[in-house]
Length: 176
Image (cartoon, rainbow, N blue to C red):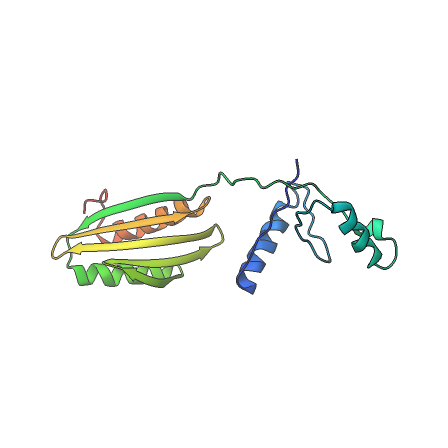
């Protein structure tokens, strides 16, 4: 079964990521990215609309137009989420500086704050994710990093962050 997928992108970088994905999947699926225009129409007068459309095209209109029946399909794809929690024997300011350094090292960008949680966005070859960093405490600092995204990016980032935080805190199992 084939699907027509409408994707609205906000900028050229997003469009390029979609083009890369289509190139990647072109050997695994039948993909068509038609020249011209693609649109969705709901009407009780499909035949009248198509006659008028054909009348406005040059050359053989039947070769230029493909029509598919479409029905909206609800996506069952859910974001994946992983939470990394640590207790680190360092002052809060030291841990905050390291977390900022670590997140900049993986090319994340600060988005905004919600109460005492900083929100970051990160784009990798594995995909896009959001990281929510919450840091509490004084000499024993409790740190929580929630990573949310689709596909492999969540585990990829979690493993990288976990490795770096364990090195920073001197090894251990997360209760450092």
